[in-house]
Image (tube, rainbow, N blue to C red; front, side, top):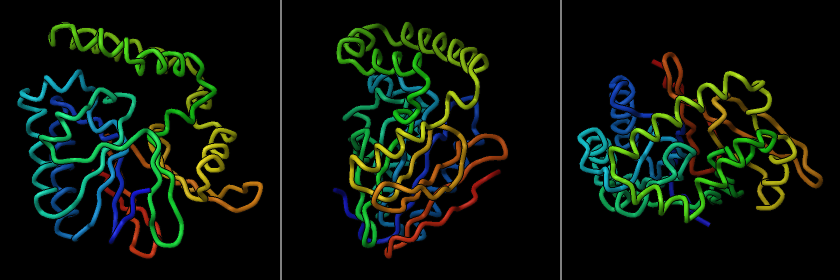
Length: 249
């Protein structure tokens, strides 16, 4: 379990991309404030990028710019931990080395105050969306990733753009509730990891709720995506208290 020595911040679902320089500027401002506030650890809970086609794309000017922002923050004293999302699950050790970040598994426990906090990207909780879960199993398989990464960068980029279009269309055809976290999956995750606090993103439905487990009361915090007029972070104090920071543009 990773222990936080001081204050920590968490963000998710920034979906940074070349076509949205406003998001990159907002992220740069947030990183500068995070470092200036002497935050011990910044957790990025997935989908930092709109998509990531492999660490061999690090020479791309936009990717290099984001890596430089991360490295600059680390060099100023803030540890950065990254957990893959459903858009950037191909981020690997080369990216981590260049950006200076620590890669986390898809489920992580963090010691904050007197209780542990469970961190997830959040897509594993959306168990009602069976087509998505099937797709997730496919793209997270070692064979699929080897085959995809063996293709030329240009070919991969075209494939990802096609997947994005199909994903957008599929979301339009699904009931919103289908794409939300399943209450049973939430309770199971908390129980399986012996935690009473959970933080995740992915659903783009920021909120905070109290949950009654079989033997204890628990809390779930959901981070916002960063889109036009939206965006937030959570901050955990050294005592383990959680507060939301409004970062909307």
